[in-house]
Figure 1: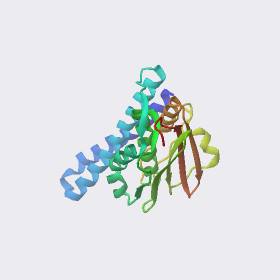
Figure 2: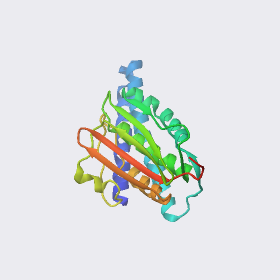
Figure 3: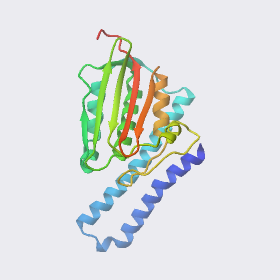
Figure 4: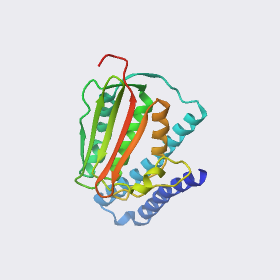
Length: 225
């Protein structure tokens, strides 16, 4: 586990060091466009490190039983709106359509912070592995027993034989995104643990070259549907 984390930290830090070293050596030759381009790369590398550390902290707190757990009726449509706004600029930069089709009033019974973390990680992954001009869609279904929300993309897809490895902490499964983004491999492990903590299940369907669908099933909200 520590070997996996060390590898995941080393890659983005190598990027940070490489970019900053290049800027220092060539700053006199840069115009404003060059500077912005390299600063964007620095930001992306820093965001990768921050996301990994944030996920690592959350996962360790969950394993130690110190993460607050306060299940209640939560509005998945509102969580989806917040997260699609969060990733709007990333989607625009890659020219990806981010479509939120979760109906207003979609309710599940779960810890809001945990499910927000799950949705954020899944959207981040979808953006990494979707090509320019692709589509990422959020949808939901609810009945008296459970509520599901789905995040689907038209991205690279995952080989069938690799799907069982996605949620294993002892296996390194991470690939570069369609624009060279670095993956960490920890986000999906955290998602599975958080969903199961809330009495739910996470499922994956994928076809190489066709895209991936993540479906999260949670207990239904206690309010009358």
